[in-house]
Length: 119
Ligand SMILES: [Zn+2]
Image 1 (cartoon, rainbow, N blue to C red):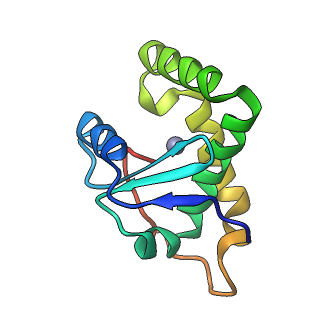
Image 2 (cartoon, rainbow, N blue to C red; image 1 turned 180 degrees about the horizontal axis):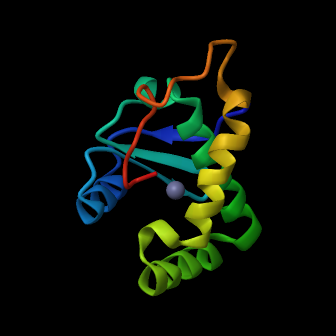
């Protein structure tokens, strides 16, 4: 499993966390995953969450940094956070790809999974 760079205590993720009023946030910028309110270890314990953020990494690669951000913010304003197409894709990818990041452990149960607006 090749993981991108992970930035803990990211000020940018903290801004997103405040905006979303979420206890913890993971946010992709280019090839990096920025965390706020969650440690690297906690994040890496949830393969669904990793798979979700890896889809955002692919979206960034597909659309470019600016293309991704412009679409993301436009769609957020248009549809609301939950209905942003990039988020819908990432939620589907989490279900589809979590097993790739399980590192030989059983997948977390619904109760053990991270839930947050920042996903
Ligand atoms: Zn997301």
